Image 1 (cartoon, rainbow, N blue to C red):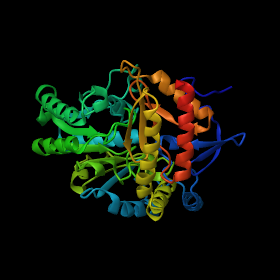
Image 2: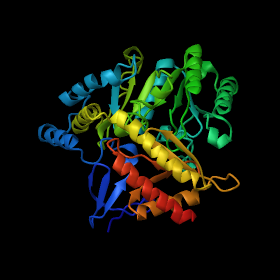
Image 3: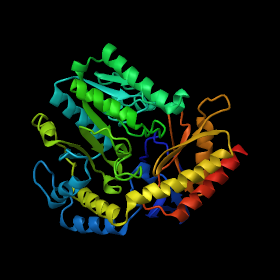
Image 4: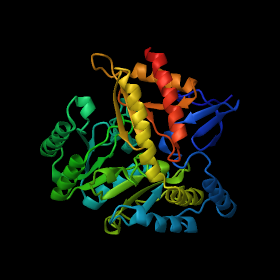
Length: 417
C-alpha cells in the first residue's frame, strides 16, 4: 500500500475538505480560520467565485498550451495586464511554476547578462528548495542539509535583522551595509558579482522587514559596480504587505523581480520580470519549461488581478493588517515570552524568546498547535522556529481578524499561563 513520504510533516492535523474565503472545513465539517493561506498562496481566499468561474471556463477551452510550442490568449492577456502593476522599466516576463524556478531563472539571467559568476545573498533569506535555490537559502539548515555540495558562487552577507542582533534598526542597517562592502572586498570582487538577491521581508527567516536605507544601499552599490539587484517578491508580492510589492515600502528599484505564491490564487504559476533589454541578454534556449504559463493558471492570475483591483485588496491588507497588528501587540504586552510583533500588512510574526533572550521554538510551536486545536491555523518560521506567523488571505475582514485574535490570546494564555 502506497503512503506519503514519512518526512512530510503537516503543521496542523486538518484534512481539508473544502474552503471558502479565510475558512477551511475538514471532513467532519469542522470550521477553521485559515491564517496560513497555503503559505501566502490563496491571496483572494479559498474558492473565490471569480477565480472558480474563470478557471472552470478555461478548463473547458484549453487546459495546457505549452508556451514555447504555441501561444494562448490567457498568457498574452496576462502579460498585458501585468504591465501596469510591474515596477517601472520591468516590461519583459518569463513564466514558470514555482518560486524556486523563479529563483533559478533569475540567477541564470543575471549570470548570462553580466558574464559574472557570483551571487550575493543575505542571511535569513529563503529562495527555494531546488539545488540552486537552496544554495542561496540561509533561513535554516533543513533546506540545504544532506545533499552537498551546493552550487558554487554564492556568498552570504548580513541582513539588517535588528531583533536578532539586539540593536536598533539604524545600527543593524549600518552594520549590514558595512559588511556588504567587506564582502565585496574579501569574498566576491565586484567584477565577479552578478547580482544581489534579497527579500524585502524575510519570509522563512522570521518575518523581518528590510528598510529603505538598506535597499537604497544595495541599489547604490549595484549601480556603482554594474551588479544587478534581484528582489524576491515571491511571498511579499501581490498586495501581501499592504502595498502591491513589498519593496514599495522602501524603494530599491529592482533589475529583476521574482513573483509567485499569490499571483494565481493557488494555481502553480511564477514569473520573473526584467527590462526587455536585460531579458534579451539571456542565452537562446535558457528559458523554457513544460508547464510554465499553463493556460488555467494564467486564467486564474488574470482573475486574481481583477479581484485585487475590484475589491481593493491591497488597501484591505494594509487596514486589516493594522488591526491585526494592534491585536497581536495587546497579547504580547501580557506575555514577556513574546518579545516582538513585526511585519507589514497581512504578513505578521510573533517572536518567542526565553527570559535570557534565547529563541524559543518550543513555546512558539506549542502556541501554534494550541491555536490549531482551537480552530485557528497558523505556521511557524525563523531559524529556530521561534516565530508564529499570521498570513491570512487578503479578503479577510475585521470580524475574522477579531475572531483570530481572540483565539490567539486564548491559545497563548493556555500555553504560558
